[in-house]
Length: 472
Length: 100
Ligand SMILES: Cc1cc2nc3c(=O)[nH]c(=O)nc-3n(C[C@H](O)[C@H](O)[C@H](O)COP(=O)(O)OP(=O)(O)OC[C@H]3O[C@@H](n4cnc5c(N)ncnc54)[C@H](O)[C@@H]3O)c2cc1C
Image (cartoon, rainbow over all chains, first blue to last red; front, side):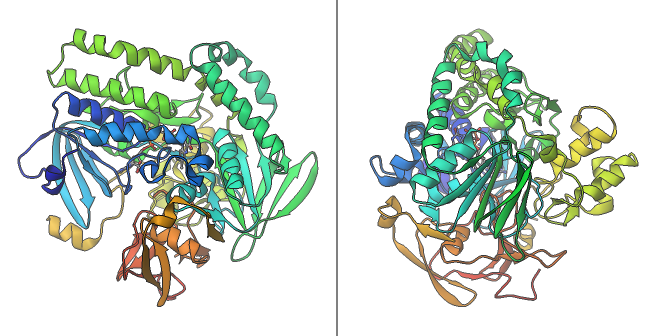
């Protein structure tokens, strides 16, 4: 990492070899490899520290500390990845937001109150996943957060809930964060599992694939986690349905149906989670073709085996290109970097392929478990296309019912946005976009297609007016 | 709503004093503004400009924009993505009732 070039922004006529967006496992691996091959590469990330979602603030966590013990070995291994990146010649811009990007490649990135226009031959989007929004009645109340949000507070501030905490949803990350919060001393009043046991049977066809390579390792860790959860003393309710959060000015309880009965549990904090989906906005802004992945119930950018998207000069790696998990993200980052080197004429195709062989094997290995996870934790229709008056768009307080009524008249996502203002608030449809797309597609009686989602326009994040004025 | 983990790594990092709606709040260096506010017991960050209902952080990763506050006079700042700095002046909807 070069401090000098970090202080001297690569502006004006200088064209970088590559810009990598996102300092998670995919972006760190891509930028490190590009730098090792002598490329002039800039890695920028909105976060103040490298690591992405999984390895957030890993450099600040001392091995052997209480926090390290709570977060575990899968977290701490990120320190090596960050260390290799730090030792490389790549330029690193923390706390820098990419808010516009266009083919060519032209990028506008905001850092410390100034927007920098940047140009590069290649752009690697390693912008990661978001937690799937969980629109349920009451989810806009203060005190309702995502499970990932609680993990972020723990990783970056050592913050732990000190009011009764209820987890609700499904998936390994929900279980992991519940255990981490519990180990940190939180009082977990209940874990409401919405996963449906019927999925177990449906998932069986994906089991053989998961029984080789790295698969058994993941299976073993998953089983250990399930056992630990069972022994943790956390009250667990399974096959939970019709979840709602009660409260006037803040969450005070959850109500849900289980085994035909309706129950209530008091809660000062509610953590929701229904898996993660690729963040949509950067790839859509660039005009990358998006495809619907029925297995993952989400859109992802169309990409080849190297992560090259439909837009020349734009690659995608890691969870931004479809949920693969942290280890696979790392290998995808290196594969994308190798193809960037090929496109730049630094490697022949044969040389690229030779260097890629090991990465490809490791990637396939880490992907063996994916189909099983996707099937086991497939989100329920009620989460994807909520009923009635549930608020979908938090920014503009637009309900599922209002969206559904217009979809039934044949309107598409952008028309519904114009009519109801959903997706027009500051979050720019990040939270309502997935559900609106699914409701639109369902009204048309088919699977979602790329354009069923809102069109995304710059800025990706609001930029203060003064900053825009200085840019012009 | 939140307390600090005892025996935590963060204990070594320095103290940073900020002002929240006019009153002093002690944060830790490296805290996000949203983290510092949650640790200080702030439950309402903003009001929905449409319904007026109170809102607070949902995602903590820059996606939901529910943590928007006024920082050093600049409205609409993402409290979860901005680190605390000494003397920072933070206004929530409570301290700034006319603001959306
Ligand atoms: C909140 C959360 C917690 C998670 N915790 C775990 C966990 O504990 N264990 C686990 O196995 N998996 C976890 N995951 C799953 C996780 O997505 C992957 O394991 C892994 O982090 C994916 O790596 P990645 O490099 O693809 O993306 P990420 O690690 O998500 O990194 C993407 C980076 O891109 C940056 N970024 C995005 N958009 C922009 C922009 N416009 N401008 C600048 N920077 C930008 C983000 O700040 C982020 O740092 C978590 C996911 C989430 C959402």
